[in-house]
Image 1 (spheres, one colour):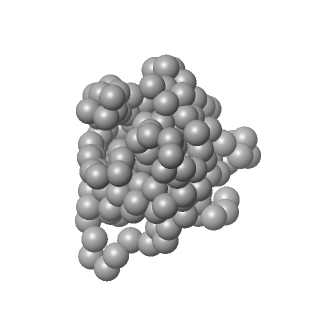
Image 2 (cartoon, rainbow, N blue to C red):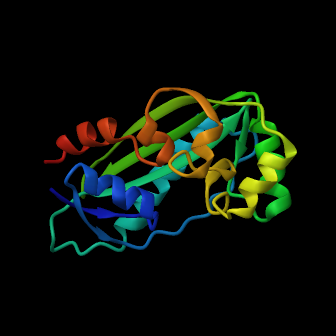
Length: 187
């Protein structure tokens, strides 16, 4: 199957390759600011949907392929932890995650000319108790940047995660089982 992909994420691109999905990148840029009092699940679903709608404006309508867009958020309590802007913010986020269970929510939207369908994956992730030194050492690897919640489960931070319940690939950025099932509806 071949699709349009409205995501620059190398992690999503790699995950799609794992399940044999070929893609053509399309540009999609939206304002990713949460709305006032917007709950995290509504936020992540709105982001995926808006990315799909925006990306659809940039596809070649002569080529009949669906478009996939996704959004992943790290949520602790009712707070959405985005991508850190600097080391200080990364330190704050990782300190909050230390010795706690949080949720990683990934929404996937698939659009074609007449419809848009969505699926959402929610995974519980438990972090071990981290020392300041462990957090600082991790930040020095630079692996914390460009990742929601300041970590990637597929990298160095895997050593901090004591338990997950849900979709490992959803934490990476694209829940493969759910995505494959959703794409089957467009085949």
